[in-house]
Amino acid sequence: MGTFPNLAGLILAVTMLPLLAWAGEGGSFVLINMTPYNWNQIYIHSDQMNAWGFPQSVPAGSMAKVYVEWDQSIFDDQEDDGGQVIYQLQGAPISASFQLQASATTTSFNLQAYYTNIATTSHPLGSVVDLGWVHDGNTVFVLSGVPGLLMNTINPPTNWMQLSLPTVGNKPLRQLVIPGSHDSGMSLIDGSTFFGDDADHVLTQTLSVGGQLANGARYFDLRPVISSGIFKTGHYSTLPVVGYQGANGESFSQIISEINAFTSVNAELIILNLSHDLNTDSGYGSLTQANWNQLFQQLSGLSHLYVAPNPTTIDLSTLPLSQFIGQGSAAVIVLVDAGDTTVTLGSYASRGFYNSTTQFPLFDSYANTNDLSTLENDQLTKLAQNRTSWNSSEFLLSWTLTQQPIDFTPKDAPSIIDYANQANNDLFTALPPVINRNVFPNILYIDNFNRTDVTALAIGINDYNTNWQAMDIQVQLFVSLGRRVTQKLRDAARFFQLPYKSFQDRRRKRTVEESFRVVSI
Image (cartoon, rainbow, N blue to C red):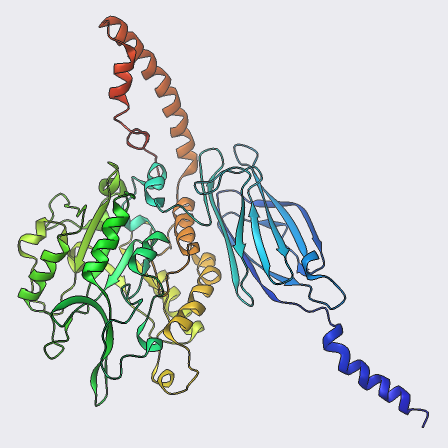
């Protein structure tokens, strides 16, 4: 009898353990340092955080994954959870530091970046930016560039390419990283086959092409189909017994309108890759020459179609970014990979349309798996094998998980968007550790392009591959040259007895980007 109270007390204690435990929501804070400086921790503090431990240093060009856990104990007020950590950029030309912090309300959690004495293209000095919170996932922070010259971070501006011209404008496309989307037009269903109306199996995007443009995507995989005589994007597959099944997405008329609206205010380079063409009105065969000519005519409605020098033979990947958009105007190029190999571009070959195989050679081989580790191994192995120097041919990193037959049977099987969220979450921890100035992808190619941090990562890699020392020298030369040119303009104005302002007005026609050319590796 004497042991019964003790046993009852033990049972009660065990029963109450889940309520007494301090465990709370957890996730990872991924820090990606694409600056040329080590980040050194100079301060750290937390209140009621179960996990808030950050590395003493984050080396240049590296990634740190930090586990963060909040306190949701019944004995504590959740809104009192918080933490701060301050990093200083060691060896930067001017004093530069930033603070990462955690804050909570009674119903939500949030991670933030506080740019204490750093200004970036998207956030002025002293900004506090919400990064959000992903339970059991990755919340990403990227910082790149050099304080006092040019810095980029999370939530990049929509004209990020134009702003990158001073640092990477002289680099050919094959030496740059560009964010791109897979099956770009499939954010909605506009007609389908009998078995193709399930959004889980046909939708690859949640944003329209216009929405993806706003988030920074610049390479688009568009798959033209004819449906009821209208050119639309499509997502079709062949299935046993029943044959072609799938659905249509955005129409090309809608996509043209979205691109034109974007380029009217953003002088960016946009690459449209057309492939996997089908005529769903006529036996699911490839588009004929006459069909393609009709589509070319419709696409001629795109503003700013770019006509390259020697347009029928040029390898576009060898042209520098400034060649396309350096004069302050947008550039749109249309790459064509027709299913019928006898199809030609005809007169459109000198009007902004190009053969994708010969004029934008690109390694593109997807993993065809729904397993994340298999995807990582497949794509990163192919990257190492095909990008052996900074000037290797273009490489498309197909960071997409593909549904397999098993995914079409269980009721709760992941959708394409579910798989996309898994893959996109993984990109930020899998890719940074393997990249260097020789090994990096040219196209970051994903499903569900609904986040700007993929763009921030691409910009960061481009910045990391910039020879900032050469740039600093160039800046000093430019400043010195500017002083000397100003004095000569004044002297010339006096000699010709003209007002100095008229000389200034003529000189302004040359933008800083045109005068400022950086030496990059």
